[in-house]
Amino acid sequence: MNICIPIEYLVVISNPSTIIKTSSYHKLALEKVLHASHLRDRIEKLKEKYPLQKVTDRDIKKLSRAITKKHIPANYNILKYYDMDIKEIITGIQCPACSRFSMKRVRGTRKCSSCQSADKEAHIRTLHDYLLLISSSITNQQFREFTHLSSSNIAKKLLTGMKLPYSGSFKDRSCQLSADFFEGLHFTGRK
Image (cartoon, rainbow, N blue to C red; front, side, top):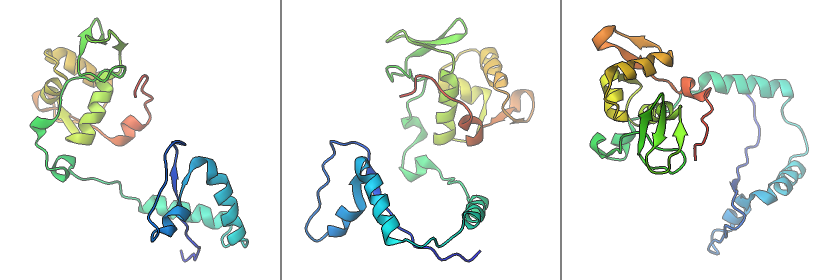
C-alpha cells in the first residue's frame, strides 16, 4: 500500500491546571503541546491547513487493516529493563481501595485487613500484574507464592475457575497468561 499523507502530532495535557512553559528557543513545543480544552480548535486549524482530502475512507480502512496486521506487541523483560531483581517486587494481593498489600482470603472473597474492603476479583488483578512483571505462564506454586496463598487446593480452584489455557498435567501444570484474557475483563474498584 502506497499512501502519501501528511502526519501531524500533538501532545495533549488533560490536567487543566498544568502550566505549559518552554524556553525561547523551543517555540515549536508551544505549537505542539496544548491543554485538552484547546484540542478542538487545533484540529480545526489542521483542517484549514490541509483542506483537500488525500485519502478515501476505503484507503483509511485498508491502512488500518495493514497496520493491525503488522502490529507486534511489545515483549520485553521489564525487570531486566529497570535492572531489578524479582525479590524486589512486593508480592501479595493489593487492595484496589487503599492500595495496601493486605488482602486475605475470607469465605470465597478477598478482604483487606487495613480498610475492610472486599473484592472477589483481586486475585485476577494480581495475575495480570504477574503477567506484566514476571512471566506469561504461572504454576500453582508460583501463584501461591505471589499471592501469599497457603492452600494448593484453593490455588488450583482459583486458577482452573478462570479457564486459562494450560500445558502439562498435575504437578507440572502451567497456566498460560495473555493480555487478551485480561483485556476483556472489567475490574471494579481499580485506581
